[in-house]
Picture 1: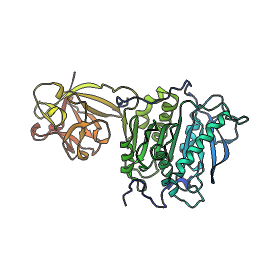
Picture 2: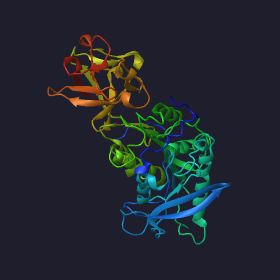
Picture 3: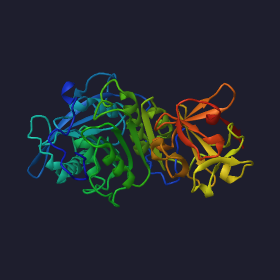
Picture 4: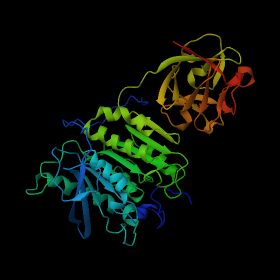
Length: 444
């Protein structure tokens, strides 16, 4: 059954495995932190302290994981001494039937990287509870998180607490969560907004409502496009509604949570997520610049929108089809299809070739500053009509032995062809490379 906004998902929602153990940048303003703190360059050991908090009658046992003294790489040490320094706060919300420990693959890397991570045990959706997912849809869990954030930040001035003076309370906070916890996270940006949030990473969430103008956050979505529990299209809708800066990391051919645990794309997930928080809360430009490489694998696709700096110009190129020796044109100022029908080069025949990493490229037309798209998932003709880059706007560059290039659309793994000797609009539907799929790449 399709998942619609604020529609119950059923009692199976949560984590199925928990019990087992150079970017494309848009022109929008960045919201990176203005923190005066230097981003840590070393990994930390991890300490953990437990706090028995509450919100009204709701008991909020919260385990706070933090950078600790000692050698990195081991298990969290209860009540270990806090490492020297001042650290930003990133809250983490578990999924249905989970707890902070079951989400160690997402909690521990944050603490190791220099974040204080409060992780509440939700009173009705953690392991051993009735699993009342209504507490997500009625806002209880999002409000629980706001309470946990308030209590955590208060420790910075609590006499005798080890975290006294160790929390950066000036740059806002981060929030993250998976599944039901991802929905809780998205709720803090929408129906139950918390203005303190500067960065958010909802994993496998569904759309919980319209964005609130009260929240200004950098938001990274992470989702498998074959998720049978939290519908991918609902997360894409949530993503589309939010203002930039934002990004969406898609794990292609993947379900609800495989990319979180060790193995399948776990490395890409964790690296992208941690560096997103480092950029957002430490103003770590090195982490920002690592994001494209972090996210890249043979089965991932990433959309970046107005993320960090002005747009990269790319290399100015024109494409001349070997089928007829004519240049590819963005017809009608970019509003029409791409056709190889021009004998000379002007703005309609010029494109910025933007390197997305991993052999991926995008083409931005000079006619209208829009990206070339393989319409209808590659079944339609190529059109320069998109303001951002996703799978339909991503192509793999193939360098042919004769010096020409071919373009393989990521969305369907088919080659771009100039049909009928170049007389018809370009389409991504060829399974092999021939003359009609070969182009001279002319720079300048």
